[in-house]
Length: 225
Image (tube, rainbow, N blue to C red; front, side, top):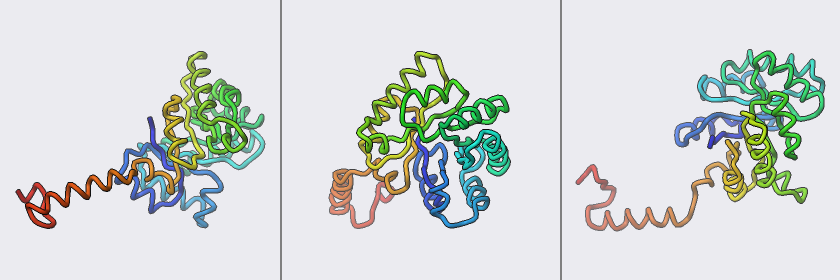
C-alpha cells in the first residue's frame, strides 16, 4: 500500500513527510487553485520538499490529445524526475495516454468512475488509474466495489497498472478500498491524520503516563530511570 498526500499545502506536506510513510503527492487544478499562488512556483516547491525519490502527480487541463502531450512534456520538465502526468479518461485523453506511453512519460488516468474506464486507460498505457471513491458513492455507486472490479480486471489481463484510489470523505472509505485491493490511496490533509486517530488510543497513552509519573515523577521517561 502506498500512502500519498492529496494536497498542494507545502506546510502540511513538510509535516506529513516528517511523520508518516509518504510515497508522494497528488495535485489537480482545484487543489493548486486553493493555494492562490503561481503554478510553477508551487510545483517546484513541492518537488524541493519531497525530493526526487517520491512521486509527484500533476494534471493537464487541455481537452485535445495534441495539447495534452505538449502539457505533459512541459510538466515533466517543470516537475523533474518521478513525475506522473494526470490525464482525464475522455477519448482525447486515452489517445494522449497512448502517445505518452510511446514517449516513456508516466501517466495517471484520472476522473475514473467505472472499471471499464480504468481498463481502457490501462491498456492504453497508463501507469496509475485514479477512481473517485466518494463521488462514485454519491451517485448511488459503490466505490470500493469499483476498485475491486478494476483490480480483478487488471489481474485477468496481466496488466501492471496500479490503482490509485482518490476522492475520500471518511476513513471507512479508505479502509474499504484497501481491503478491495487498491495499490495506493491519495488522501487530503483534513482526512489524512484521522487514518490513525482513535480516542481510546489517546486515553490509553494518558493512562500510561499518569501511572508512570505517579511513581517516577512528572515529565520523567525511561531515559531517566
